[in-house]
Length: 306
View 1 (cartoon, rainbow, N blue to C red):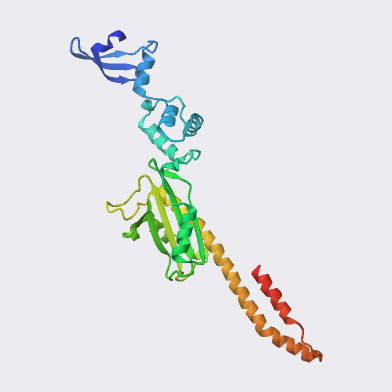
View 2 (spheres, rainbow, N blue to C red):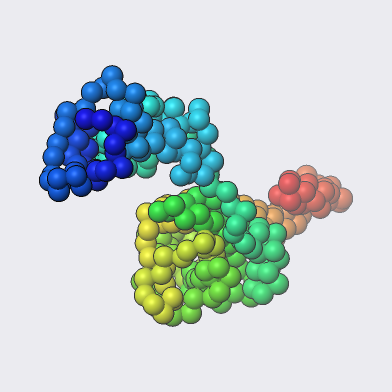
């Protein structure tokens, strides 16, 4: 076949593995096929066009924050040659590639510059001003992505103060907009309800609130009403990690508060019985001056404060 006369034919299909080209010849109006010669100068150009770009070129061009070295490292992780053409992948290889993209851990987080999160400091100030709690902690998770869409999860927890009992009271936000309805089917409530609060020293009907904010270029709402967020695996994972971090902060506060309460009870007992002990010891020793037990109380209070 004369490749210089390609303008007179229409290429219908190219079977690269079998080196066959199927075309329509406008000269005699017939469908024909021909064996391709791998030594022909047009062969590489033709097959390259059909099979598309290489795996490394595909990753660096189509994905954010993936450079050539990371692309080569991923290809080795997935078990592909870096120069593998995307158009030559079989269905099984495409599934393998998709699974490897989910499992590879050396990809950088997506660029969050297009997002508008609240920020830890404004969120903490707002919670303290509105709830007036005894304890408050916030966290902003690193940017992540689901289905190619970047997102950032921010969470805050507040305990005690003017917060009413019966918690946790959950306040949900998405792209700075409050979500007021369909709370029960939201992914945030799923994560909260799955948490064993007893492990974090929170029992009964505690007075504490949780605030969650999901910021993304595309929030995966469950319904057209946009009142609850779907339980996408990536978002649920970030919510769970954020809540675990805050729960540990709350547990440390609860432990410290419990120690302070025990120390206060101990100091009250000392203050109640030391005067009597001092009086009895003075009478038994036959002395008139009682020992300075107030100094012991001051030392106890000082130790407890530390």
